[in-house]
Image 1 (cartoon, helix red, strand yellow):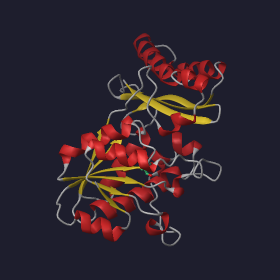
Image 2 (tube, helix red, strand yellow; image 1 turned 135 degrees about the vertical axis):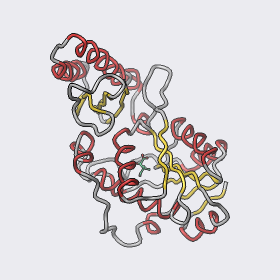
Image 3 (cartoon, helix red, strand yellow; image 1 turned 120 degrees about the vertical axis):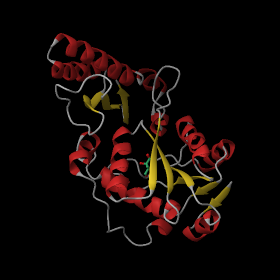
Image 4 (cartoon, helix red, strand yellow; image 1 turned 90 degrees about the vertical axis):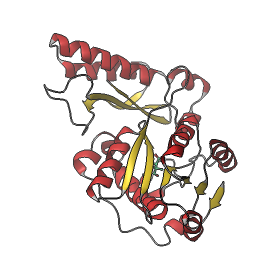
Length: 283
Ligand code: PAF
């Protein structure tokens, strides 16, 4: 695996290729990331991953400084997964001057859910992803793989690619889960032993919400009240939920009468102790 620390090195490394397949990450890799790299491999003539902890997508009180940096382990995993090129620029290389020119995603999508609780998050994500796309895929176009664990991020990036007519195909990777059902996430590493056992309750709450929503639709019950029940149940277990909600998959708006199972997604974000976890379940 070739490690490109600068944009010049990256361009040299990619010069022979016509269709890179790209997986952007912030490092601290787990099996979910590695599954995306393996998924990317047959989709291009060179497989590229990036590791860059993007300051722009963290709020001042969030974990930018403490975000786990696990360089050696990340490199070993990427190498074993068959990644060809790792782009890992220092911050001064990707942001040589303050990044004042930003990509502003559609507020109708980006100000909901995650965007409501992490204002500016999707501007930070869209800006860095646009820049990473320019670095990795700018010369040729190509394919990029995004995990559906970050469901709203995947939709925002898809919309960005479509609206700017970027010659990039966005491919979705399914969420990988631990044996008990907890969605794999770099932030799971923050959980203490007891918290780790409790953490699966978020995915269970989403599964129950989806099941009850489905039953409520069939019986004509007040489906919206189910979200409140789900929030209350998680609070009673000691969580601080931001949202637990059922939305249309296509635009994350609340479903209307025509939106039935097969078109919906239950999404949740909640804090357990000091750790904020997110998850979702299509149904
Ligand atoms: O999902 C992530 O790890 C990040 O948001 C991304 C896409 C690498 C942008 O920093």
